[in-house]
Length: 188
Image (cartoon, rainbow, N blue to C red; front, side, top):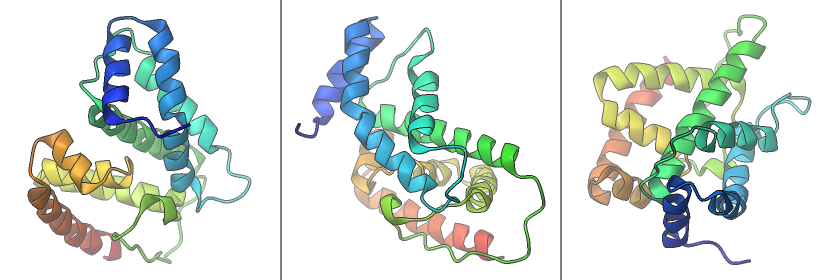
């Protein structure tokens, strides 16, 4: 099966917004693999017996994304941006719930020039990034949104630019500044 186009997904999203249940099932079939790959990349650094598996993360995100009575996604980018926020919230909530003891003083090296499919992420790092993003949001909400879409959503700079309505060059600049700020926060 070929990779669905942005237009295909956008059309399905509009049909879902209109209440078409068949379109909802088709949408899930179209985006499931991409969301599962994204979820797996976020969970790759977790221990083997970790209780939240990629399929469970995707399913929880589906419940949040499509389980609401009013679904009104503008396009593919809006859907994946929202999915990124949902996965972030689910992972952070899960990490907080499962964290039984304080973390030690060791720090993990964080490379913010990543491709999400190759970045091992553990609960401590997710919590650290979430706290840093909350602080960044107070200084620059747009930079925090760019990081969230890039890290948790796996969107490219071009996709983020289209979703936010800025040029790719502006997003690259926002991303570079956010990385520098986060690097300082995460290594402090």
